[in-house]
Length: 128
Image 1 (cartoon, rainbow, N blue to C red):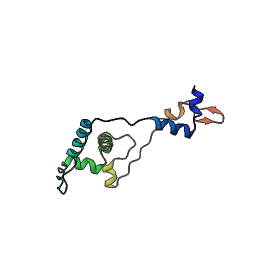
Image 2 (image 1 turned 180 degrees about the vertical axis):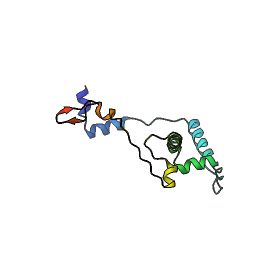
Image 3 (image 1 turned 45 degrees about the vertical axis):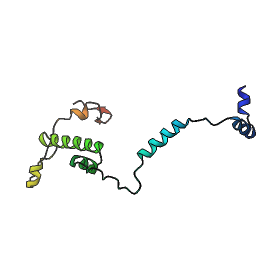
């Protein structure tokens, strides 16, 4: 039976579709649909009301790119504030660099380098 369905020709399909009838819609349903459609259409020649002006916050959000961009801006602001309050050890001090002073950071702790055996001297590991 499924093989017969797959082998149907265009002529057989056209004959099958000619046998079907269009569904009948009651006159009351058609009148209700037309009435609802006409109620939603603007009056001919009538001016459409102007949209309400957007609020300041909405305009600002739209100008910056929506809520996704606002979330990224908040995250970047928080990260910048935290780096400003508690800068990493090797980050140059902004106030000193504005004054023209140079600071040199040196470390004698090589545990990060030697901990995994990355430093090799003539085929042998250097123990830190």
